Length: 316
Image 1: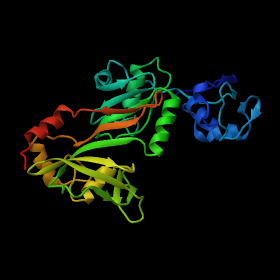
Image 2: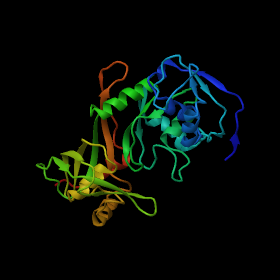
Image 3: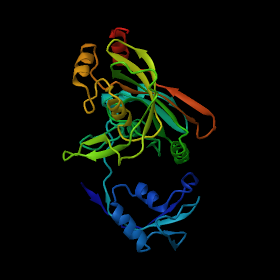
Image 4: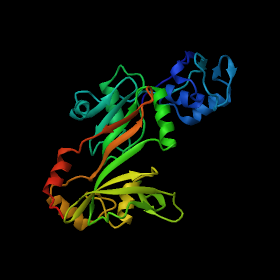
């Protein structure tokens, strides 16, 4: 990776939009490509000053603070994907809602939310390429690569802060549609099982039910019953990695098309019905709009493949 070495001290005035942000997080965003260790070193040595005074990493910025940033070695920013790429250009058609605070995407299955792990780009990099004039674009939450549906991206730091607070306070209501094996009993409306995340030697993440795991709960409602499967609505009360998928497996009803927590016989049967992806879709998202304070609900329609699979199934 090529490197540049700015030789001049930079004086940056803090935008009121960034008020309340910690200085270490501000520097990590401003000095993209600089190792965390170096950021904390220059803070510790007093080379970063706010209003000509030394500050600790947890100092919270105030509007119009003047930040002195010393010369540091910055890695060249990674190039954004070309807007001519089909995947990037097509993302425009998946936008469900957009205003001056946020963008909501009906994320397609198979597209990661961000680049990394061998992927050159994801939704956030693609959006930055589509909206080069937009100074701030950050993911509010995440979806697994194979999961489709509602994904929120903040266009202002204040919106990101508000939505993160709502997520912490469990004020965001996320509903998923999942096609699971067998007959999910209508009386089974919740699965509570602690989950533990394991990293395999290959680097792959696998989650399992374990007594020493983190407390996790998913609520369920039957939407449609078929001969071999059930379409359920899943509402994750907690937000653990792969939670809905593992809870479905634990309940004895694996999600169709799941290649990790699967029922091979069911997957083969669903392939014959036209399913060639994970049938897990973030169908709706409800939250308080960060600017108006009004409750807003977004609905992401199922993609044509999932809709067709449901049409191909025989009713129970």
